[in-house]
Amino acid sequence: MLGPIEIEVIRNALTAAAAEMDITVWRTSRSTTVRELLDYSTAVFDAEGNNVAQAARIPQHLNSMGAALRTLLDRFVDAADWDEGDVVITNDPYCGGQHLNDVLAFKPVEHEGRRVAYVGTLCHHIDMGGMAPGSYAATATEVFQEGIRIPPLKLIEKGVLNKAIWAMIGQNVRKPGLMLGDLQSQL
Image 1 (cartoon, helix red, strand yellow):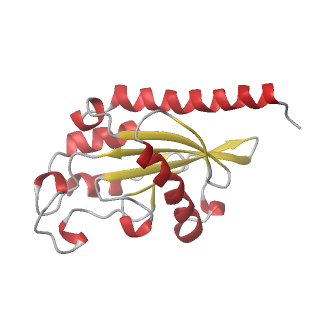
Image 2 (cartoon, helix red, strand yellow):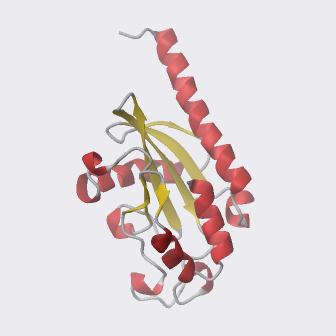
Image 3 (spheres, one colour):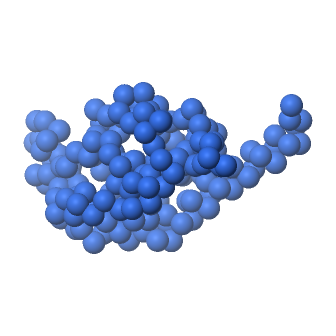
């Protein structure tokens, strides 16, 4: 049983990890949306997908990130199918995401062969394709007009980037250098 001092040390270490992720995203991102507007979030989740630590960014993201991870684990990518080095991404609001511009990325954390946590990032991307720049079309009548929908999939599998998925995403956005640069910062 842990005492209050040990619990506080662990809590601060997990919060520091989320803050380090935050700084990494900020320093390596490309778009003004992420670098200046700070429209992104980072968090650490336990092995069941519960939020245990987060950086001080956008609370709305953090509340939805836990629900999105639970949806991914429950309905799309079973925890047993995640390997060390995998990164699962999605932006689909029908698969746990918020809206198409917000891309979620989750990675399992292993210790001595056992899943102990997940880490996650959410970035608001400058454009996801669709009928209007910025993927905000006032006249859109269905989600398909708003941009590319990324179902929950492994962008990185066992540490190897899926170049076909990467190319497909870049081919469907107006500013691939900015969008893929921000996505790289999430990874």
